Image (cartoon, rainbow, N blue to C red; front, side, top):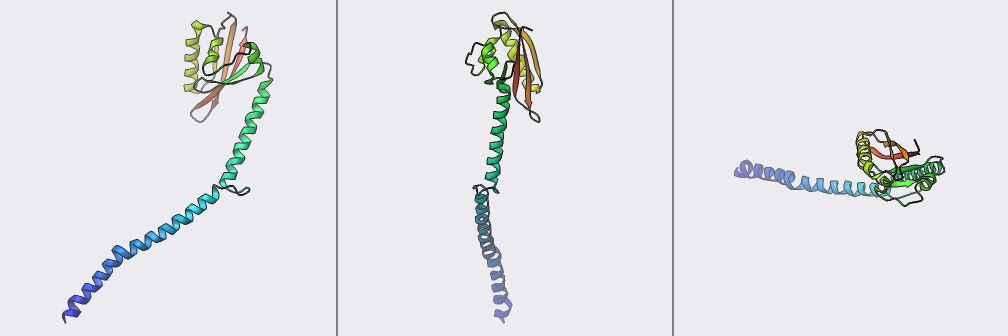
Length: 176
């Protein structure tokens, strides 16, 4: 009688506890592991080029198109009749066209060197205005004087993002 009343219910309870605390979590881990292995294989497949349909192939196509667009736009501006240069949102010199190089006697510019075309007493004002326009993501137009005393105008257009300026394309007008 004691077997039927105490031992059998205790064994059933012990088996249920064993199932709940050991077997079920281990089964979940094994299933979870198989799912992770399968997911990793799918991710690896998407990140490996396969001739067109993977994410990596799509990224490669987008990058290639972006490089083409960048080269095309620089080719258009390269022979433009007006001196043009490009600066980053931090003000660092990135690129210039031939007319800008001619106007600055083919000087090599790096970083903030481009500001050397502006007369020294005006440089702080010019840099402050570029910084303000960059933060405000707005167009800039500054009339100032060059190092040789010539009147110049810097007219820049930001590459606007949603909330951020990514740099400026700046036209240099001499004698205005």
